[in-house]
Image: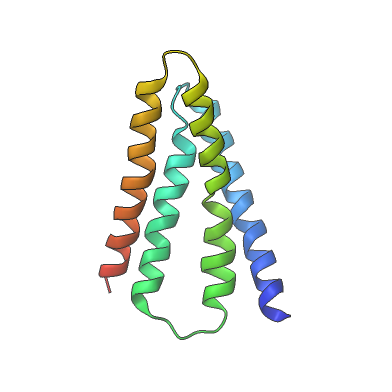
Length: 118
């Protein structure tokens, strides 16, 4: 039961951070590419890899920080909807390809880098 509460609290915190980053970025910059989602996915992936690499044996780290905060921060559903929008918008296929490569490639490398730091 405690772990469920930790995931719920952490997920709420991560989602609020993601919303804040998205709102601030979109107010300051005008771009066709959804950069805020890329940013939170790369940073979140790096942090997840870092914590995995540290092999911390603290019971609350995984449910609260990794699954909760970082899971709420990074989001596959937002990424998927953004990719569909790019793919179904005329003349956006190049952005679709670029964004797919950036999201999957850079997020994976960030997670791997974080993991191998420890």
